[in-house]
Length: 212
Image 1 (spheres, rainbow, N blue to C red):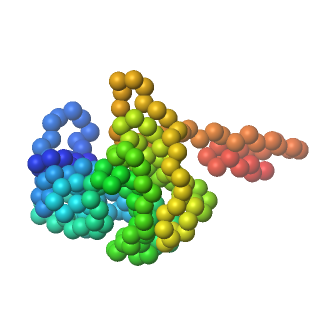
Image 2: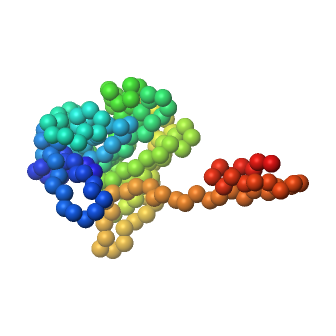
Image 3: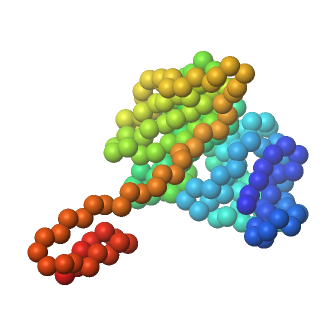
């Protein structure tokens, strides 16, 4: 596991498969006031909303040892959650929510995240703390949270074009509750129905195909 927070930098925790307490290893102390840690395209990232604000690469790949350096990749004030989406080949988008000049921000990369280009933003009244995204054909569906709402925005522009679309509210937090993070929940796959005719067939339930 990798963790981040205020005062300790980025840490790695080796999972032991039991309940024995494990001492985290601080792998990078370049930054110590951190918000969100994530892994995309086999690279560890972390965001910060203080100092030189934005999204940072932590070392190379997914490091677990001390002495890693965090280098800023996407500078942006008020950075909170972020989501990276592969748009085919080495083309990527990064979408992020902020609490400073609140909105959903977009970047594009043509080299698997080695470099990024800012692609604008869609503003929102309240700060955005959580965000997730998924390809939907040639568009990207974005879901984000403020403290009181779940929002949706569909970016139908090309991966290297300025973000566009209208933010809509799809859910409101009940009284005395607040939203923070957001993520897609896994769903169970439904086995296909297979009809056979003629002589009996052996059914391979792993792939749902029939062989005579």
